[in-house]
Image 1 (cartoon, rainbow, N blue to C red):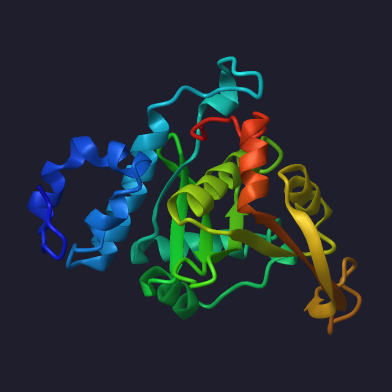
Image 2 (image 1 turned 45 degrees about the horizontal axis):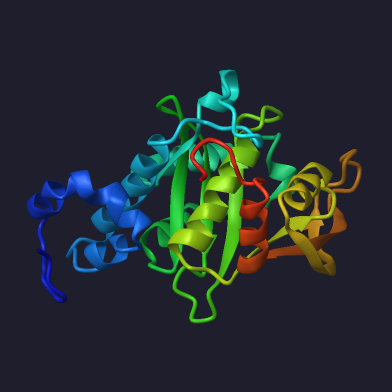
Length: 252
């Protein structure tokens, strides 16, 4: 039995591995990892718990029927290691992704990996890395969690939607967020459509707040683009769940 304030080492923690998924469901995992002296290892355990929890459930469609093919290859999230950062930077600077984000320096990613207010994860599918995600505000007293970044290599096959639903689950069920929000460049119409279809409401626009490369490249200084702020509240998320709109692989 674990006691409040008890310090547990890795060996002890690993002995409770069979209880990890159950602990997440009962909201107890944070009471366990809080006392692990190695914070990075604690974050890794938390991600493994979430992964173990989602793997217990077969992929389901909105009508509750089993699915197959690409949708059955559910993505999994694991903590980003420093050794992953070369991959992270390469995905971020991919010509297919770069117009829609503002790439970070390596030191910024290192800070997000280490700072407790962030969650920095690698997206894996069938054991292969396919992108990364960053959450910020995980310790916000206002329970407002930001989807800081979702960048993938695979496009147009539903992976972004799967990841987004896993992240909504993490934000509302595991981080107890009241609000889950993001901003996206107005020119990123595909992402705007995805977020809107997943229940995010437009809350405002930061007009011409970022400079982006001109589509034709004729203007070296770039052109101005606006940021669209979108958000989802916990009661709105719960309503979507009640309607069966969150039922994909790993999200129950």
